[in-house]
Image (cartoon, rainbow, N blue to C red; front, side):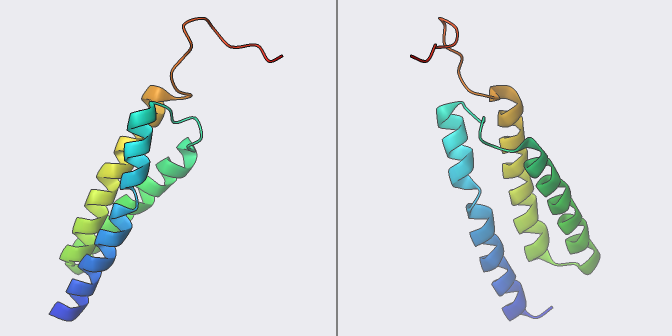
Length: 98
């Protein structure tokens, strides 16, 4: 693969990987993942894992790197979804609506 294509892959991968950061930060700060879809992030993680395998098959550093970082961020989101679920619980139980 020529240097131009690999550079383009690194830039594209960097942008798409960076798109996960706001979700990771927001979920961590709020300690709530109630609006996140567990099946969506699990399926996305499986797809990213296959992209890593593809990158290994074709020997593309940009595909391997970008998808490895994306998988790490996705796994963080999955772990927070499992850990935080619907978010912090009120110490007084659920609030009643008027």
